[in-house]
Image (cartoon, rainbow, N blue to C red; front, side, top):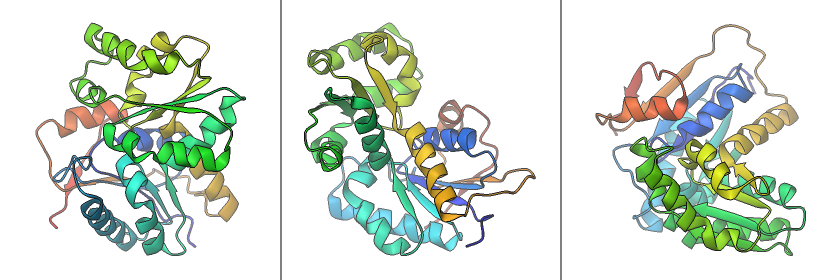
Amino acid sequence: MDSSRPIGVFDSGIGGLTVVRALMERLPLERIVYFGDTARVPYGVKSVATIEHFTAQITEYLLQQDVKMLIVACNTMAAVAADVVRRLARDIPVLDVIEAGALAAVAESKGRGIGVIGTPTTINSNAYARRIHALDPGVRVYSQACPLFVPLVEEGWLDHPVTRLTAQEYLKPVLAEEVGSLVLGCTHYPLLKPLLRDVVGPGVRLVDSAITTAELAAAKLLELGIASTHAGPTAYRFVVTDVPLRFQTIGERFLGRSLGTVEKLEW
């Protein structure tokens, strides 16, 4: 496989840009194609069959872009449709944020319980708990849905008193279990890390699935011998199905830099 081929990263919207940001920092020589299905977000309120159908469409599009790896950067997609991606990808390696988060959480737990926070859909799917228990059947997992975090992040209230109070309320039952680590099970949540660190205190390690996914990608590329050695300017493409008015502003907050040109795909 040609190591100069890009990595394909996709999400139901813009949250997966936190994964792209982590990939840019960890793998600065890699080309990346990001796909955000902004016309059909949110996925969390849709049926499993619909999510699988949309995920298959996006996977096929990215495979046409000649990617060397696929990363499912959407927790909802990863929870219900990761098998669809792997079936379509065939010999192309596929990573997802839930697998990466579960691996890191088990490695960090050191015999203590693991807390998981996410959207109601991700938490209700029990996907993190299942992956964690598959890796370590003896570990205790405490899950908590945090539905208000996504709109608060998109509003830019990253260190707002309302966000802090909300986090304290959501995390109270999880922290009561004296967990050793807390998995940020939504790609919006890494933007809340400074605030969440204050709320959970120094005794709880935050597991950022964006960073752990980038680490897993780096290891897999090295293992397969397809890590880029290209020393010139790195190309990044951002493809969406709709360009809402706030996409550029919110997207650049997630990415930590300018998005540049955003391509709009007509299905």
